[in-house]
Length: 167
Image 1 (cartoon, rainbow, N blue to C red):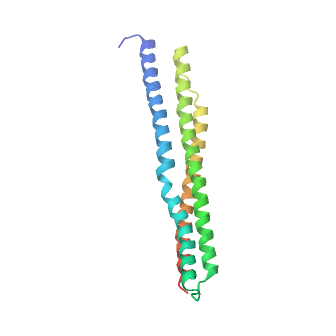
Image 2 (tube, rainbow, N blue to C red):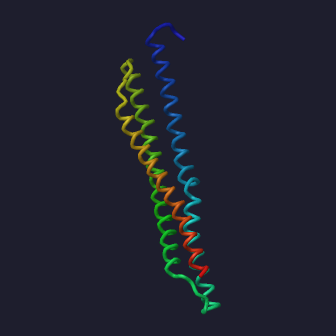
Image 3 (cartoon, one colour):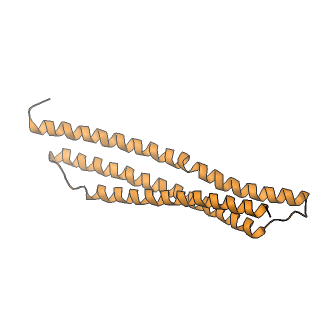
């Protein structure tokens, strides 16, 4: 490495640009993994519960019409499963949006570093990066909250479904 400060600075910028590019690539991979794996189980659980509840009640009533169910509790259970499914879909979208903002943060950092390399001076203004990362965390925490609502809806829906069939 050279003793010239500008060359050393250029090497630092190049290194940071490579790191920012690698981070952006990792964010895209994380985005896909989050969207496909983290929320898939909740979609299957709530959606499967809706189908199972209808199937069970329909099969029992077709074979033994005198069996009694508490249809109020069954309606509440079904509504809770629908709520869980719906908020999970919204959480799915928020996961995508959060990762999009994190990716854009990496791209903004890369652009700032490119500009610094062109003028051979550091650019310390990271306002755009901070704004994007703040938005990303906002979407992230909203998505986590909705995923929690989905879990609670599934649990409560299960309780109401059980109460509806054990009359």
